[in-house]
Length: 309
Image (cartoon, rainbow, N blue to C red; front, top):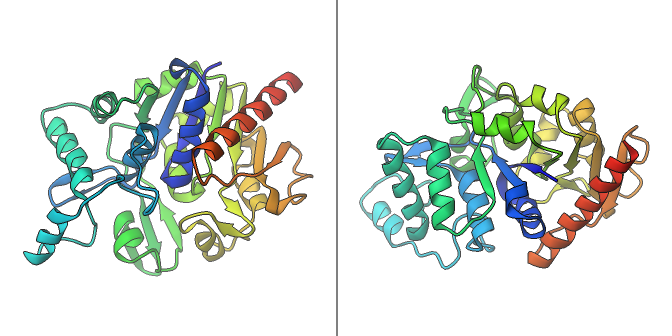
């Protein structure tokens, strides 16, 4: 059974890792948001791709939720001392990824090819694909100000209230991404922020149309638990956009795109009458065992859903 996972951020990386640990690597493709990619200090930074790769490689920093375990900070400390751009903190090990990526891109490699190279070097067996080889910068409109995503998210600590998430037009998927959907039996939408991690992927032509037409089932996992985001600004954004911060809102937001919905036991009963199949599970992923457990339970739900169809 061929499975595609749409992922971005910490929650997305965790479920992607769980799925990768329970299925044969040739059956798993993880399509990652690149809307938060940007250039910093002359380097191409791909935060969601790196978060997913580090988690799959077993080198993710659990303390920070981003970057690598065992990280040191000598370079960025010296950048600070020299009066350089230090608001986006790059660890020494993490810096090696950005240097390598930037070098290969400047040699003419595509982002897909570079990601394949980095995954191979990190010992990752499953296929990890950027949603596009084109730049696709997400922007955040707050009042009359439009922020580049990382300026809003990191430099401003996601505090300016969100009026609108602005996504670029005319971004196209790669042939590798299109092939992944054409052969997919199942698509999982990971518990990622729907507005800044998943919507940028769905906005890439023709991903949404492919999802509507091709997979046997699409299942979303809620990133909201007990009215709060497990990590990050999703709940705050929902309130600012006039949406109740609930799992039910997430399911309604994905609407006709999904065939099944997974939400947390803390919200038991809140999604029973959605009109689609639902499963109430413990969606918290504190460690590797949790990631594997949830992945198995989500797969069991998917298999049951396919038998109904």
